Image 1 (cartoon, rainbow, N blue to C red):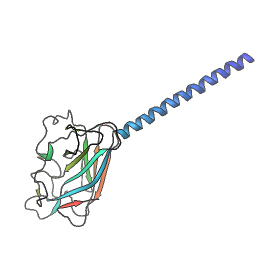
Image 2: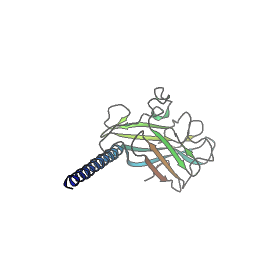
Image 3: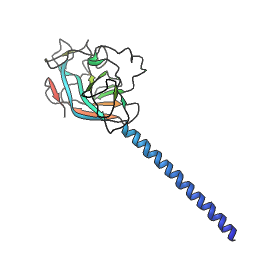
Image 4: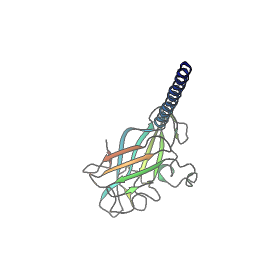
Amino acid sequence: ILIAFVVVASVFAFTVLSTGIFSSERSKETVFAGLDEIRSSLEPRGSVIAYKGRYSTTSASDTIYKVTFVVSNAVQGEAINLTPPYTANGASIDPDVSSGAQYKMIVSFTDQNQFLNDVPWTVTFLGNNDSDNLLEDNEKAEITIWLLNRDTAVAIGSANSATYMSSGGMTSSNTVLTTNDEFTIQMQPPSGAVLNIQRTLPSAFDTVMDLN
């Protein structure tokens, strides 16, 4: 009886210890996965700026032809690849990334009329940076979302850049943004949390608008 009791107690103790160790390891893996998710996440900094344009040179309807905002790392962690599909200011497709080999970030646009799964965008790093396309600690990058291309739009006002994407964006006058429209921009990094930016346009358009 004594031997049986010792054996049963030993088996029970081993089972409890094994379960505890396994649970501890799983908990640690979950914590580290959560930390990796946070350390690879984007954080908006400052305002979301919208720029007024027109769908075409003959149209009298005002719309939004680009949106800009600044992002940084959510916490001091992993560098985030911000290699864009186009060169700065939307001049042309970057030959180094047109094949998709280095194109890591997916940017989508949604409003009540459409869903653009891969909207054109560019990046300009601000302040101190090491001249690569990796968003690292203490770096900030301005993201420009191009909603109209050069064949379908014209800028309004000297504050706006007349440079557009060569293609992409909204291609129909029935889908362009108008007053009081709500839209969502989603930045999807290869790892880490998705950044959602949701804004509502004002009832009247200025040349440059702070949507915050």
